[in-house]
Length: 198
Image (cartoon, rainbow, N blue to C red; front, side, top):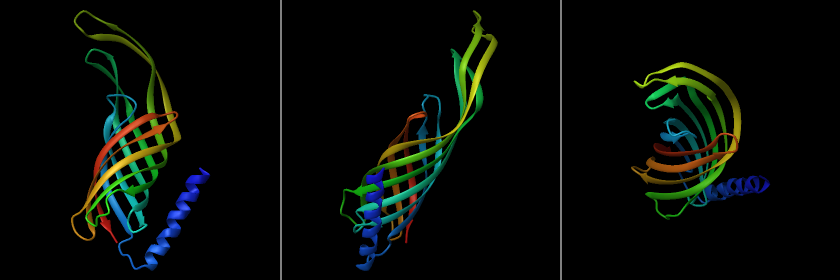
């Protein structure tokens, strides 16, 4: 963590030198949506994101902070084609990313990066269930034990993204990534965004 803070400090210091050289559009605001998976195959949905980035090192490095919100229906498979529905699964996400641009181009960017993540999760977890399946496929006598989870999970994320400048100040991008947490498991994501440089 100390080395990460030192790296962030170096990037911020280099932004002042880059501004002194007269470079423009050092900031970006982006909004978009990721198709996000949680730790279960049925729990997929959209995470809506807002991101602020600071471009340094002649636009080859980006230090970015992002906030997101995710909610998806919560279904537990009990038997073939029989689901038990719980409260929606929710995430409020915060990520800090350092990314490096592999392409020295003013219109194209191919970035790889990562950094720390802190996600709040709200889950209605199914601990156990008992039920009777009849010959016609119907399910009766359902008894369940649930566990509600409301906690903050620290972790990390890795990402790759491609961004194209539609105009001098307007960009369109696509990204993929994963986020890993000790308690909440691994989430994968793929999404698109539109941005404004200023």
